[in-house]
Image (cartoon, rainbow, N blue to C red; front, side):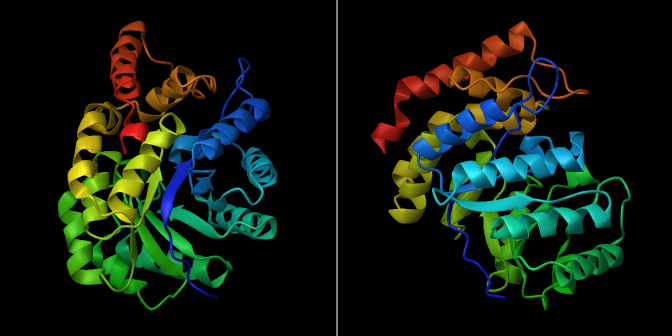
Length: 303
């Protein structure tokens, strides 16, 4: 198996739901077309922003099927295949492989709280029983488990485990990866408000939930920082988006804000699935002001 090089904006696509709470493939198709028209490089269904944890395995497979068919060769595909059950991870991974997905994104199994050694064994087992490269997804706030340096050393000899999306929010962790694992794991930006920092320190890809509503702006920031290496201009772009990104990462309602942002972008995707509730009128007003400020700045054209 050849390890991939991950480059570009990797949009963790939302899963639209209709007024009855069912997966809305028509809305998903419009969302995918919107992302692709604005130049994103990868489409990633089944991530946290896609509310995978609130869907059945059949629903997740149906979304994978639809995405693969709709996207075709217009972008590259990676699949979020995480679950609390190992058998479901392997089932989803095999399904993604058969559909032509190029990589898997996997977090720690949530709720069970595996020890470091448990987690090492888990990922070694999954890697031995799947055929695709694996992007580690460290999100301890959601899983309750940290992918520590000891864990990374424990799977360092598994070539298919080749990248890490660090979503702990810790800039110190990013530096820790540079010092300890710079030549081993590809670093992928996993916190929207740290994108410029990640690019400065060598990340070439950005797994981005907010790209669902601001895809052109994400591509502009990526091209400015990664392609042109113009970090003065990149900092200006980030400064214009930083308050919105900060709200997403620290406001406790990431998925609700992203889905509302899609509506503001002209591509409505419905409400989040319960137990999450839509934003309040006041929250919508505050977020809309941030969104409108970014759009008025015409950042994509400025880049």
